[in-house]
Each structure stands twice: as C-alpha cells, then as structure tokens.
Amino acid sequence: GESVGLHLPTLSVQEGDNSIINCAYSNSASDYFIWYKQESGKGPQFIIDIRSNMDKRQGQRVTVLLNKTVKHLSLQIAATQPGDSAVYFCAGGGSARQLTFGSGTQLTVLP
Amino acid sequence: DSGVTQTPKHLITATGQRVTLRCSPRSGDLSVYWYQQSLDQGLQFLIQYYNGEERAKGNILERFSAQQFPDLHSELNLSSLELGDSALYFCASSPYQGSLYEQYFGPGTRLTVT
Image (cartoon, rainbow over all chains, first blue to last red; front, side, top):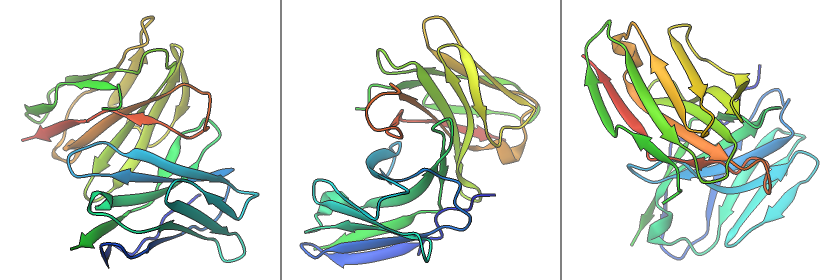
C-alpha cells in the first residue's frame, strides 16, 4: 500500500533563514500530496497541497515541490519565523479525501 | 480556532471500559473524519462520514465505531478499551469545496486507558 512521509525527525533553522522539509513516498496512488503543520497541543492545520500532475506550487511564504521521478516531496518555508516552529507532516490524499500522514518533522526555529 | 469542537478534552478510563468521543464540525461542513494520533503509530485515519453516511474506512478496529447524526455532529465509540488505545483522537471536517484536502481539525480528545 501507500507509504508516505519518510521524514527526518528533526530540523533546526535560524530565524530568517529558509527551511526545507523533505518527505519521501513509495507507491503513489495519491492524486494529491498535502502538507500539514501541527503546533504543540493543537490539531493539524492545512498548509498547502499539490496535485500529482504538478511539480511546483506556491503559497504565502511556502513552496511545495514534487519530484515524481524520485518520489520526493518538499516544503520550503521562506524567512522562517518563530511561529513556524511545529511538526510538519506530508500526507497523501485518498479517493474519499482521507489523509495518509507521514511521520512528521519537528521544525525548531532558533533565535 | 478551527471551528471544530471536540469533547471531552481529556478522558481517563480503565481497560475494558467503553467511551464516547464527540465532535461538532464547522458550520456547514458535511464531511467528518476521525484520526488517531499515538507515539508509535503516528497520525492515522480511522473513518469518514459524509452527510450521515459512512464514506471511507481506514485502520479502525472492530471495537471502534462511529456515526454522524442528522445535525452533522459525530461520535466515535471505543469499547473494550486496551492500554494501547491511549492516544489523541482528532476529528476534522471539510466542506468538500475549495481545496480538496483542506480539513479543519479540532483540538483533540486525549484518551488515557489505565
């Protein structure tokens, strides 16, 4: 079945630098890949999604890149801020719009 | 605040017991999803309802069941509880419009089975 989101567990970046969070997936039955952010003590929050036939999509301060050849997904956050500290999950989208989440990366923004 | 509410916030119960977790979706959202988040299994999809009908099932145990009522709120019933059922349970809702996978998650119910 689908395996999404082999993440590095932690990432630390300096405030103001750009962050790149990576995710790998195995077999892709997903039409979409999605990034969610989870702050401590809260539920996940949608950031951005990308359809599987695209290779790049930009949002506000975030860019998602999809490389289907190597089955790799990344989330780039520009000018990382303290409020960006959270766990970031990539997820694959199922036919009923349910989400298959990866293991997540804890992003820590250093002052 | 996502607009999704979940009660209770915390629940402590004993093995073998049964509990009910409640979720109220955002106003107007027809679709409700339940997820379980544990340290060893991560965030896993359990079940989805759309306008009162079951739409998709994930890794939901037979001891667990859910339903969505006519007013669109949903309940997740967990029975014959085991220590391994201790986890955070999230409900999410979506309007089935706009971004296909933008789900709004509630704050979760933390279940502790002792």
